[in-house]
Image (tube, rainbow, N blue to C red; front, side, top):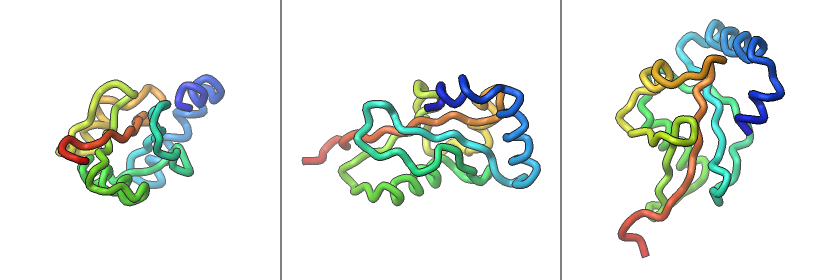
Length: 119
C-alpha cells in the first residue's frame, strides 16, 4: 500500500500533508503503517497514524498488540521500510529522524510470528 500511495499522491502533496500534521501536532510524528503482505493479521483501519515523539517502540508495539488482541504465544515485529527490524528501546523520535522518507512519513510494516517455546 505504501508504494501505491507514493505512486498516486505527488511528493509535494505528501510533503505538505506531513508539514501540516507536524505544525498542528508538534508532539507527534506522522507514520504510515501497513501489514506485511503475507501476514495473517488484519490491516489496521487507517494506514496513516500519529505517534508521540517521546514514546519508545515498546509502547507503540504494545498498543498494536492490544489492537490485535494478541496473546503471549504470538510475537509482533515492526520493520522500518519492510526490511530493518525495530528494537523496543528505540525512541520513535530517533527512529523518525534516522528513517523518515523524503515526504516526511516514517514507513513501518508489522508482522506476527509464533514465539519460541510456544506450543
